[in-house]
Image (tube, rainbow, N blue to C red; front, side, top):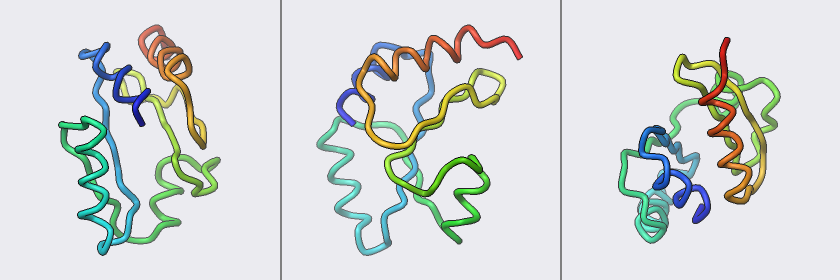
Length: 102
């Protein structure tokens, strides 16, 4: 999370959207974690069926967390991965999104 937040701050032209898959009972804890990480933008909470949410985002997603999806300015997915990533991977995904010509 720290690397993602750092990269997002270096790229104010990029919209960072975070979706929590935490249970309702963990919502306060999740909000405290995000605040501690310096996340100040709007975050969302997943509702409904886990599988419907997973399928709607990317059929390759196993449901493992964290998961990262990167879209270009027109909403086309250009990068996807499960698991942690370092700043270089986030930077590369942003570059890919910014240069993507569908």
